[in-house]
Image (cartoon, rainbow, N blue to C red; front, top):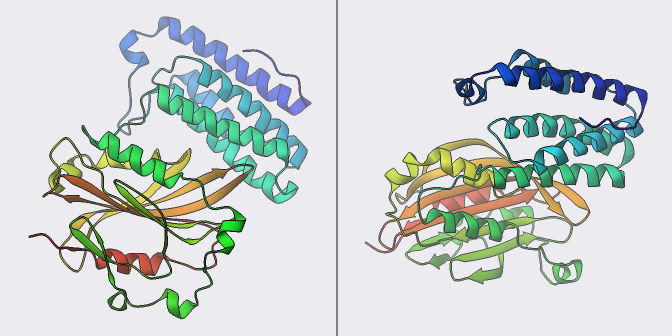
Length: 342
């Protein structure tokens, strides 16, 4: 490992890390090939003694708590993830990437408070997330549902990451709805038809983009995002509720691939008031836009349209700085979904 110049505490950390790297290299020479790729019951790679010590060092080393020191550490972590991203990934690359990213996220949150986002801190953390994305792609961790659902995942991902309106465009959109209007009962909303389904859509959702297999709406824009997406891509493989349940773990991975940093926090069976069944996923994410990072939360309801072999994705994404809370109305929208073809 190449030594990095830096403060004394960082050099001490790097030297200790290098010692473990040497021990790991020596252990690798004596380990049988089968043991090198063994995983535990949780799907994580089994670590050697030296690897466990290295992991503990990354997770528990105490760094100084001033902003300048933590920025030095973020830059160092960025260099480590650069190395990981430059190599051909093996079964442990993702594990080490996640350890480094978790420590970087912890430091970045502290720097945000102390230094109001130093430019070098932002760039280092953004580069770490890009390295994670590169490893995810190259290691095949972007696992999609069977067959044509690759199209569904890509379609939905592109929708979610579509550029928001500019400030000037946002001013043209009336998003100053009152709390009373934001809580309008779904029965008062006219049905909005998409293929063979209708949705009771509150009128504060303004349609800003549509394609052959998606509709996109905004309620807030300009430095904040409240976005609703209805995607309905056709699949080449049979679309059924059983297929969705069977590939649930892959759908979780699909959802987590929509953003560079995203974690599904839960999922549950959901059925609308009119018998439309599917799975509702909840997640948190970090949205990267130009020189800013935004904490974001979202929900995605996936259900099959068996008659025309489409997967429907009804997705809401909101940054943490929106003026209103849309979760209650979103659940009412999902409850209103009705199939019009029998």
